[in-house]
Amino acid sequence: MANTNLKLLGAWFSPFALRVKIALNIKSLEYENIEETLYPKSQLLVQSNPVHKKIPVLLHGDKPICESTIIIEYIDEVWNSGPSLLPSDAYDRAMARFWAAYIDDKCILAMRKSVLVEDKEARKAYLEEIEDSLVTIEGELQKCCREGKGYFGGEEIGLVDITFGSLLGFMGMIETMNGRKMIVEEKHPCLVKWADRFASDPNVKGLIPEPEKLALQMKQRKAAACNCTKKWKSVLNDQAFCSEIMNNALVFTFIFFSFRFLGCKNNKHFLYWLVR
Ligand SMILES: N[C@@H](CCC(=O)N[C@@H](CS)C(=O)NCC(=O)O)C(=O)O
Image 1 (tube, helix red, strand yellow):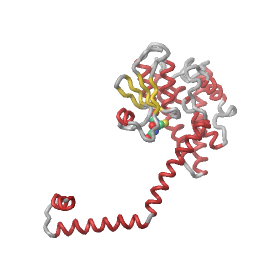
Image 2 (cartoon, protein in one colour):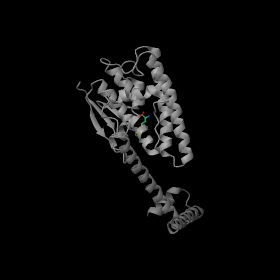
Image 3 (cartoon, protein in one colour):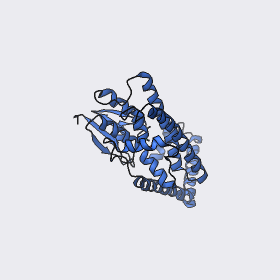
Image 4 (cartoon, protein in one colour):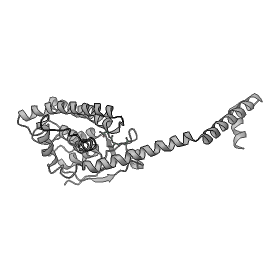
């Protein structure tokens, strides 16, 4: 492994962090893995990704790079010897970016919604959306198979494989949660074979989290979010507390306007009286 000054802010459950780990492995790059809990977010994460405050962030020396697919492209450009993650041909590169964006925009969005929504009918609609996108992805993979390629990227794992393959754990979690297989031989023969090949690649093996472990973690996160909402609801349902706040607000407004009426010309005088 090449000795580099690389640190990855990620988390075991994050498919986006997994993308970066796979890309670093393919390039045989050594890195320090910094496990983020996200709740709360570390100071280092907030400083390194002040816009989105999300993982993954790759720190190259003291330079942070954010957004998983952008990080993959950065890795490919900086360490350009060894296996390429993006095609050398400009058109093929554009196509790879197109499919990576499709996976992020269509697939992940529907997957996220299917996990978060409580309504059964709405969830069913999102599961169907996922299945539609899987059929589209299968169609693209079949073109590669017909050309004798094992991966979207050709003979080796590339950007599209990493982008989609990072979702296999999450997909398994959705299957576990709904008791319904999503990637199936009858509809997605190429994807089934591709998924086995991808997961057993030495650069990927052991990195895809267990669906059951992800499902448990998701349950805990939902329960924590639910408890937080319940706490706020109980605060707002506490009539004594709310009426006390309302009374204080009324008293404050009354004093403020009385002062203005009695000749306190600006807010500074009022504030002075208040803190005196
Ligand atoms: N588009 C981003 C998505 C990253 C993302 O959603 N990360 C999640 C963890 S899996 C996160 O940091 N969530 C924290 C938050 O939303 O506040 C990428 O590709 O890197």
